[in-house]
Amino acid sequence: MSDPRHPHDQDLTALTSFTAADVELLERRCLHQGFFRLEELHLRHRLFEGGWSGEVVREVHHRHDAVGVLLYDVERDAVVLIEQFRAGAFDDPASPWKLEVVAGLVERGESVAEVARREALEEAGCEVGELIELHVYYPSPGACDERVTLFCGLVDSRGLGGVHGLDEEHEDIRVHVLPFTRAWELLQAGRLDNAMCLIAFHWLAGERASLRARR
Image 1: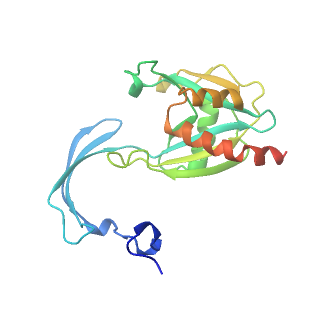
Image 2 (image 1 turned 45 degrees about the horizontal axis):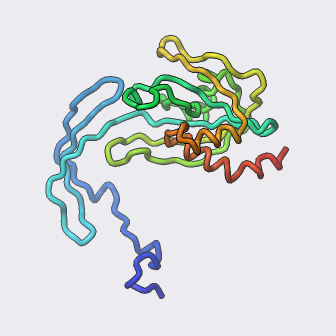
Image 3 (image 1 turned 30 degrees about the vertical axis):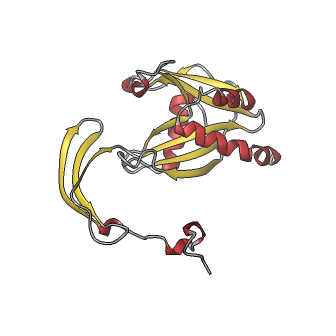
């Protein structure tokens, strides 16, 4: 039997199961509508100890859901990364150009797998073979409704490189093919400093031997 003095030992099924029905939306205001939408929500919600909260005001950034895909060449033990300017890193003390995995937004009617393959071709000039789904997660649920689906895509990296991207989206993307060990050194040095890279590379570090054993 679980000891109530040690909550971490309690059966997980005893944890709260609040749902959207336990939130009352009082008002929704649009503060900005551009490529993304910013809303101000006035709401109240049920409390863990019973009853309801007072009125809570939160700003929520509404984004398209996103897909990331770490391109990995099993045969050559190499990864394919992209480098591009990122406005959100404009004030980064090192550089607003970031090394990242291929990524893109999910458009209406697209599956996440279709997005992964499309973005790999557009951003890296790369055809993806097998796609392995790693995780689906909220990068910042306190303020943003975006969900990310993260993949590892198995590829042949021979001949990849150069500059890619869509002119109409002002993309200027440089492709790098790196040995896994070199990419891991960059991660350890803080050069791969975004969530998609960190999550995908830690997954690959654990699964790399089994992937290579399948050759």
